[in-house]
Image (cartoon, rainbow, N blue to C red; front, side):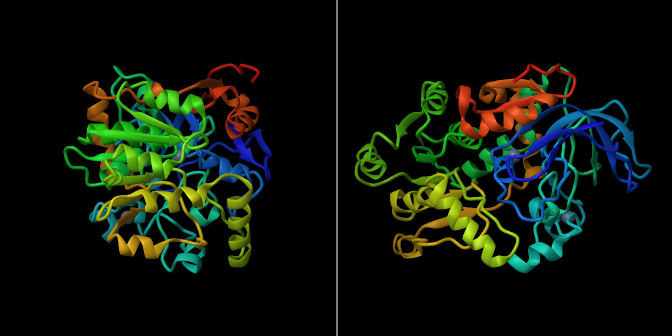
Length: 396
Ligand SMILES: [Zn+2]
Ligand SMILES: [Zn+2]
């Protein structure tokens, strides 16, 4: 089959790779109909994620049709149309039973790698390095789904791929970020980063009862998309002083909660290299740690800072003193995907949200190498790329 493979920094190729096989009795094989490139894939593309190997199949946002089912899988049948969550969970361990699905103890066979860094490891992830389990990803024609009697959710034929695909990551991730803000009626929420996760955090904040949501970014097309709901207020941080603006907009008090949907996913192969690369990335690429510091500075006293943006290492100049002085609550972590799939599918079915609003590019799998670059450079107003293995190359 064809798969989008990692070959090194800024080197992504569509190659022929072995078809996936059922390895465990609860597995399923999914024929991928739609898959997306995630902002976090760009950190792999940039060479920042340790334990990636040449030829690894990328992608953790995908959906499709079940074509093979392991003998102990009683939930799925051949022909089912499913969306697959990007975190892999067993459904039986202490953490899965606590609804802390992204902390599953049984889905990362390489947990020792993550334990060296964090003490304990989170769950396995599709297409996201050997440190997270080394599972081939879903930017391919087929994918093996472990614990497929726990993760994938069946989706009705009345909804298109584009309406449900983002249940695989960015919709639940934005939603959990908003939920972590413990929103009460009348609240004002500020969101740093209006990329795909930020867009879903904004819409989710309104779904959860926020009165005002303020999106912060520097790309006009992202700000325009955020404001296209007719409710979201936006700030371009290249044009205004964000702290001053937020203070003015909130009567001098600050937003009730701040969401950092920017993140800093800079890693390395050794602890010191990881640290160095984090610093390198932070100073060379964007203002990423700056966004977290600013969200802590902007938040009202007693408020919440919610962090869906992924952080990897040791942050420099982290203003814990300000967070302490203001009595802030910090909430963060990989999304507990499995908890959100059914309720968010229900919101889509009810028409409360149509997640396809973030899509700017629709291409074939063979367009992946060009699209990774387009997405990374934010060319052509690129916000979210969807690829379909069956769609002919658009020659991007
Ligand atoms: Zn993602
Ligand atoms: Zn588990």
